[in-house]
Length: 362
Ligand SMILES: NC(=O)c1ccc[n+]([C@@H]2O[C@H](COP(=O)([O-])OP(=O)(O)OC[C@H]3O[C@@H](n4cnc5c(N)ncnc54)[C@H](O)[C@@H]3O)[C@@H](O)[C@H]2O)c1
Ligand SMILES: [Zn+2]
Ligand SMILES: [Zn+2]
Image (cartoon, rainbow, N blue to C red; front, side, top):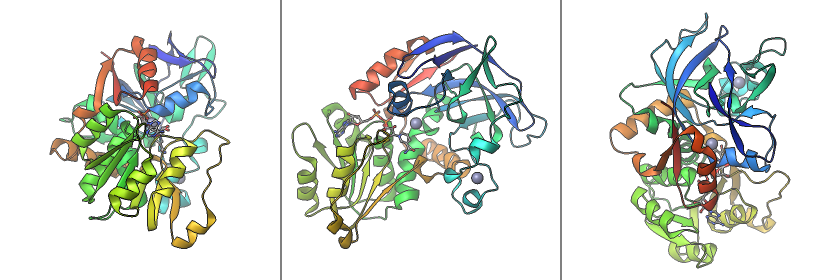
């Protein structure tokens, strides 16, 4: 099958011929229908984060089950599924405590043993599976705890977005921060993640929803998805602007870029008792600084991993929200690409001017 392989870090993706195994007892083979381009893939390609290579990249996808292992009874061939990197072991303290996205056992329990054949190979060489998914490939072979079954009337092109970006943005609002109706919310960065957080704030009944970005086209899109105010950070200091709009600071801020400067801005924009949630992946080794005295004002700085999702229950709900019109996904797709165009897609993503781009497999 064709797959986009990262052979070195930093590096670009190469479309290569790759082999995929048959399902082991707890595994599911999926025909990939659509896969979104997330900035996290780009962080690994650029080397701000690191992973085992060679690897098939991609982690935001939806498809149709082709075959299941002998012990799988959750899905059957023909079912429609979304994959998720927040795979869970199901028996650790975090999973049983209601926080499956925190599961630390997935690296041990959800992968194949070293003496077993690799799920992905290229000739005699083993390829690493990226974030339990490896979505930039015509097929996926994943542990059954790395996917969720969804309604068949959900278009899979839109469903793919729920695999990472949408769930991360909505979950940061609903689950990590638990935004309450009437509060003021700021979202810094209007890519796939930030636009989803903006929609989450709208759905949660926030009062003011202030979008911050460097591109006016992204701010216009943010307004169509729920932003009540916009701040162009290339024209004005976003901290001053937010304090002016909110008359002193916001109750909830979300950072969806992945930079020291924007994480610090998110904290500086808070009112007394406010909470800043950093979603963006800040380069490894980078420190984030805050003034200690601010903590006495009962301000919180925290982070969110995959929107603290319980994806087996969250994702089908988000599908319902799309199908009943509350969650807008069509507007978030800037364009569709073929697998061969993937590097162009990542070049577009680097400019900051596109929202989500989706690779369609046929
Ligand atoms: N925590 C998690 O679980 C998780 C999950 C998925 C993605 N992420 C991370 O979230 C971040 C956003 O991902 P994405 O796919 O939406 O990225 P994206 O590239 O699509 O969007 C980033 C947006 O930030 C804007 N931006 C850049 N610099 C800015 C600045 N200084 N001030 C304001 N806006 C600025 C860009 O114009 C762009 O619109 C990335 O760091 C990604 O790795 C984290
Ligand atoms: Zn992602
Ligand atoms: Zn676990």
